[in-house]
Every structure is written in structure tokens, then in C-alpha cells.
Length: 508
Image (cartoon, rainbow, N blue to C red; front, side, top):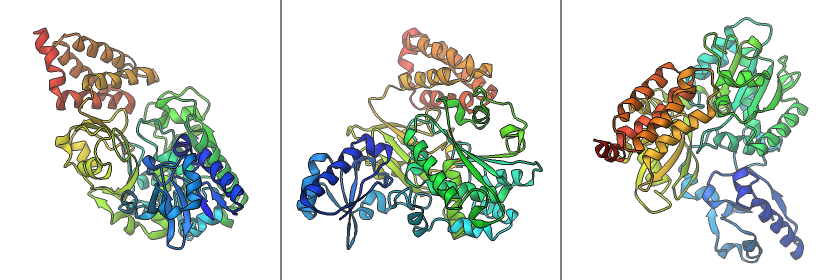
């Protein structure tokens, strides 16, 4: 018998290691030979640990499994109380458009042969047959934009580095996934690490870079371990190293561990940290594409941006750009969290509405209470009320509503949420995580907490002061930490004024 038991951090947190051990012990007791593959997660977190068994009709899912459920899995799998049927027929999974996450959960993450059998390295081989400028043209044509928050066109950044003249160039992957409600980077690194390595190798071919770094937050020990092993395997196999797949282009990779600063998710602060300096924001210009790591031309891309490139090269940029709406092309891995029935990763084309995501895919709230607000884009993202549920999920549509897609993390709140407390949390978060480089962020966030405390105490006159402070932080901060902190605060004020007006009226 062949079993798949995820070794993903979320699955392990739910007891996957104990379930895998129980399967091995039960098989030994029954004298049944088994193979247990520790795969990545399929992304359906509410079903973890999701155990799969190979069957003639495909892989059958069982979950959420416990140690107590294992014995009956051997005795009568067809009638098992946790039986889910074919895994890929589960509605949450079946309706996805999986491009970046096509292999995640299907293969052994550290098997290079499994990776190739699932279509891996096809994109890299296509890229090797092209000129650097042709690779860049394909990425531009695909419409791929940065999946880390700003949504900057990936191909334009690559072209800037490609055209730069310097003795050394670098590819830096930003895996400092610090946003609450975000886990796609971790899930891909733990479940399909060779995809990221392949994407970085293609970026190196396109730009002339010879050295790559993956900067991973220290809170991801499993992802760090998997990526280090994957880089070692890829180097030993000649995928990267002195000659990419036997070509004349060298590309070496290292895994670097962050020190736990949220602000190091900002590219210039990350570069400072990577150089061994304090993680503070750099003023721009110069742009990292011209003077980045060690003052050399550097591509800094998010995990999901780089991991999308192999599919684009293998299937063609037109196939990728055919998905999505407007200037938001391709797929977006939604990370659904908070008060929901069905939380997890859902990859789909841009254009799905916010209401479809929350009510249909996520199944509404786990508490059964009405949805009150959805924060999109991490702790610095705006709160969207139910009246925004017709909003199409894309960069431009969210920007028009004074929101942001960010890393596409969604945190759902029911009608018991205290919006003033959530607004205060945004300011407090910024005050704690600020690098201190600029005054609007360093001091503004502290004043924001104090002003919200005044409002909560009944000082209605402080509402206008809070709005002025938010505008100052948006326009005067050096980076997105201070510049985006006003988004959750002002959206809470704008969409839920009744949570603030009682105290104003009491003061008046």
C-alpha cells in the first residue's frame, strides 16, 4: 500500500507526524508492506492531516485524520468515516486553476525525478534555448506582476537588470512572508521547492545573474530545511551550480535566514539584512535593479512571482496572459484564513469576486454568524464590508476602493469584531515593527495608537486628527509599512462609522 501524509508545517501542527508513525506501526503489526510518502499539502487546511491512499481510480483522501482513525483505514477504507473520495474531486480543490501549485501535494517535494515527471524543468529547458532578451520578452508578454504586494510588472524589473552593465548580478527571492493570514510562500517552499529553484535559474539566464539567495523568515524552520536540501539536490544533479543543466551559465544558490523583522519584507530592508547590516529601509533611488545587493544590479522577487515563471516558459506567455482580467493576468493563490469554514490555499484566475471567495469557496464564517469585514492584503490591508462583495479580485479594482491585493491573504471577521480595536492594532503593529528610519512611520504609528485611545475614551475631536495623521503617514513614509498602515485604519473609519460615532456623540 502507498500512503501520502503531508509533511507541511500546517499538517504537522495538526498531528501529521503522529499519524504517519501510526500508519507505519499498524502496517508492521498487520505484516503489510507500505510506502509512506511525506508530500506537501493540498492546501485544504481544515482537512489536515489529509492522508491519501493510492487506488486504481486515483488517490483517495481521508481527513482530518487522527491516530485513532488509522486502524480502520486498513480494515475497511471504503467505509471509513473520514473517507472523502478522490482527493482531486473535492469541490474546494476541483474548481481551482492550479498553475504555480500544480505539483504541490501531488509529489515528494525532494524527489527530483517526481518533479520532472510532473512537468518540472520543462520551462528551464525552453529558456536555455532562448536569448536572454527573449526570456524577458516572454515574462513581459505574460503580464506577470509581483505577487509580493506592490504588483510591479516582473518583466520590467528583469529587463532593467538585464540591461545593466556590471561584473556581478544577483537574484534575490523574498521569502520573508510576514503577513498575518499569508502562507502561500511557505506552502510552496515546503511542498514544491524545485519550482522556486527553477524559476530563479530562469531569472538568472534572463538577466545574466550568477548568484541567488532565498531570504526566508526565521519563523519557517521547516521551509528553511526543505529549501536547503532541495538546493543541495539540485546542485548535485547539475540543475544549478557551475553550469545550469550543462549549459555555459553558472548559477549558485544559498538559503539565508532572516532575524524576525517584519520590515525586512520590504526589498531594500531585506537587502541590508542580507548584507549583514541592520534591517532598515533604504531611500530610493537608486533602485535595487541597478544598485541592490552589494551595490550590484539585483532582481528582488517574491516566491510566487519566481515560481510562476517555469509554467510561463513551458506553456507560453500567451497561455498565462489569457487568464485574468484587465492588467491583472494569470492566477493568484488566495490564502483564506480567519473565521471561515474552509480555510486554505485556493489558486484561481484574477477576476473572481470577493463575495464568491468568502461565501462560496470559504463557506462563510465558522461561527455561523454574519460576515462583518474581510481584511485583504495582510495586516496593512484595508477592511472590506459586505457591500464590497461584488468587487472583482484584481489590483486595479481594489486600488479603486482604496484597498490592496498585497500577498492575497484574506482574514474574515464576523459581526462580533470590534473595528476600533482592529484599527488600533494596525497602528500598534506598525509602531512595534517600524525600522525607525523615517519619522512618519516611527512617530506617526505611536501617535496613532494614542489618538485611537483618545477616541475610545470619548474624545470625538480626535477623529479629524486621526485622519490627518493617516494622510501624513501615507504620503511621507519611506516604505509601505508606514505608507499602508492607514489603510486598515481609514477603511474601518469609512465603512464602520457607527463603531466610532457613539464615542464622538458622547463627547459632544
